[in-house]
Every structure is written in C-alpha cells, then in structure tokens.
Image (tube, rainbow, N blue to C red):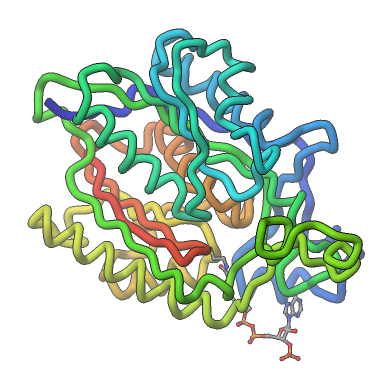
Length: 328
Ligand code: COA
C-alpha cells in the first residue's frame, strides 16, 4: 500500500502588483528587489476575496484533475498563516463552499512549511486508517492582508495564491509517491518571523493597531542563513534515506522565498540551477501556497514524467522546515 497524488490545482488572483507599482508606494526600486530576491511581480487578492476563496478555486481544479467530487473527500487540511478568521478554521469554510459534507476539517499552521507538514499528515492518515481514502490539502494565503504596505523590508517580498493536492491510496507500492521525508521545528527562533499581536499573548487593542503589530515582521538576514542551512540539512537526510543523490533528481522544488536562497540551497546540494523549479519572479513568496503553485505548473506543463524524483523543501516561521522526496 502506498499513497498517490490524484490531482493538483492552483489559483492566483488576477491583480498583478509589479515592482514599478511598489516604487510608488515605498522607497524601493525594481533593481533592488530583483537583485536581492528575483521577484518581478506578485498577485494580490481583491478586497472581496478571503483565503478560503483562493483555496476554493485551487481545490475545484484539483478535484477536476483527480476526476472526483467534493463528496468523495474524507479530510480537508488548509495550511495558512493568513486564515479567514482565528476560528472557525478556514478548512471548515472551504468544506462548506465545496459541499464536501463528509470531510473532517482542520487548519494546519506551519507557515511556509505548511504544505510539507500537510503532506506528512495526509500520508499518515491515509496509511494509518482504512476509513480515510481521499485527503484534500491546500496551501492558501492572502498575505497581502497581513503585510505592512509601509514597510519596504517586507512588503516587496510577498504575494497571494493557493495550491491544492488530492491524495489517495494505491495498492501497488511501486506507485507510492512519498519516498522519504524529514520535518523539523525550532520554537526558540519564534520571534524572527511572526505577527506579534492578535493572539492571546497580545490581544487586539487600539494600541496594537496603532503600533502596527498585526502585520508580519521579519529579521531578514537571520531568516536567510537559517533557511539555507535547514533546507540543505533536510534535503540531505531524505536523499540519504532514499539512497539517492542530487544527480537522481528531476526537479528541486523549494518553497519560493527568494532566488538567492534557492540558488544557495541548490549549490550546496550540487543540483544545477536549471533543475531548480522557480516561479518566484512571477508570484513572490506565497508562503504555504508556493510549493503547490510549482507542482501545478509542473503537472500542467508536463515538465516531469512518471517515475521522476522531485525533491520538495521548505522553511518558514515557527521556525519550521522540511524536505520530502516525491516520485512523480
Ligand atoms: N528597497 C530598498 N532598500 C531596502 C529594501 C527595499 N525593498 N528593503 C530593505 N532595504 C534596505 C534596508 O533598509 C537596509 O538598509 P540599511 O543598510 O541602510 O539599513 C538594506 O536594504 C539591507 O540590504 P542588504 O543587507 O543588502 O539586504 P539583504 O541582501 O540581506 O536582503 C532580504 C534583504 C530581506 C531580501 C534578505 O535578507 C532575505 O531574502 N531574507 C530572507 C527573507 C525571506 O525569504 N523570508 C521568508 C522566509 S519563508
């Protein structure tokens, strides 16, 4: 018995925010953003769209690709740091929109590593319990709603979008798609990437709003170093566990934080740059959505063949990180 990816879908909002647009909003330049991050544009959701709306569009595509109905889904997991509400979960809101009446639903908060964490949970649920046959996981973010648009250190980096995967079981273990995984966390670095207020530590008040504590804050330099080290370590572990090297990989699909981080990870794994899947120039950092957006482009563009090895890796607030080796 193994698990299989039955369908993939993605969605990005129509509105494009270019570096030139940002030049009019904060003291920055297209040249600075491109040279530091590789980002040229990002998508921004409309005022009417919440994270569940982005997740809904991506899920419809994934259901179509899997040739399944919403009623076939047993579990819905939404990974996000920009949920519709603190509660109820965005997964419950998505369940209602889809009409996935029999699914049990929960949100998973692991920041940019959310899709990898969700894959691991889905894998365990499917393999561990005969009751669960189809799991929908969605990485979805409306980061534009938690970005401080007056802070040039962060506002140039992020974008909105959603990526969805449907996972199911397969009898033939040769078809199994999750070959190896390594996930980790280190809460002692919680404060280098966070939203300070709005939870029980610092509930919303006029003061927290005035102090702009409901926006994402980040210590960019620290994140950079920790991200590269953690992703390289995790990738090496899963390659070793599978008895493979960077040469065996068709694509390295890293969380799309910025192209310098991605290049540094690839170089330390001795994976050539043209085997690193990158769309950060078009979408920016979409946190939990980014790996799903990449996988959907790979699927739709026929950029991988059955049996190819794809190495996923991510890093994010928490801190959280991980790597997963997937057989296409
Ligand atoms: N436009 C122009 N200048 C900017 C800027 C912007 N958008 N944002 C920051 N700067 C300035 C800073 O104010 C600072 O100025 P100072 O030296 O006068 O104080 C300077 O640029 C910092 O430059 P530098 O040290 O060269 O930046 P960097 O090479 O470290 O790049 C990041 C900054 C944020 C791009 C980089 O640290 C990074 O990518 N970090 C990881 C971020 C990330 O991916 N987070 C999510 C992880 S999931």
